[in-house]
Length: 251
Ligand code: PXP
Image (cartoon, rainbow, N blue to C red):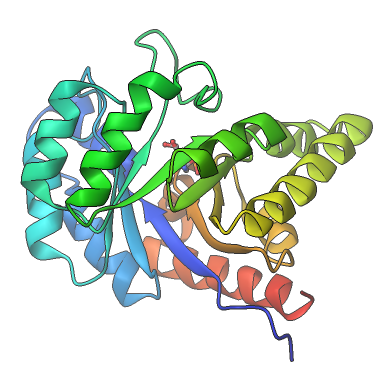
């Protein structure tokens, strides 16, 4: 048995809302998806209220907070409006992410070095409100050190570049990105940050990264919602959980 701390699975339900919004109306309901995911073994639910409300809407976030039995991780850009909504919602956690309207998904990490003046008051207000703040960053030493200086308790390492390289079969790039993640997770732990990871993970990459004992939470959405089309969401969550458990046993 491994002595690594438990690894939590946060299921991101954004793309259930994407599907709902394709036709307007109420179905499929992201809150129902969250409940099904929790019943199947998710430790928490993540949802991203984007400024353009392209998937999750304000009402979804309020209902998730009211209706789910596990912690809610509220992803958002660092804007005054989002700060106001998150303080009203009082989620368990807020994950601050960069956001550009034209992007298809969150393409890179937050530049906490360049934006430390903007982020500092956000982090302080959320810390004061008892909301656990996480900064979504690339596994770069400068960014990690600044996150610790800003007194964010958590970072989430952006795994997108690694996952893309693995899926596309770019071995050298995948190895370089993996080594960055390994070193970044270690550095962050040594700075007393709690370390999460996410973006682009599938069963195989989740199993691999689960073996890093410095990481205690994975947030996964797009792949799982896609798989759920074929085998159902409960089965997808159980399969992901099993992949993570196999990886963790090697930690
Ligand atoms: N973590 C963060 C901070 C994200 O922004 C996203 C994407 O919304 C994810 C995790 C999940 O990424 P994916 O949907 O690719 O699994």
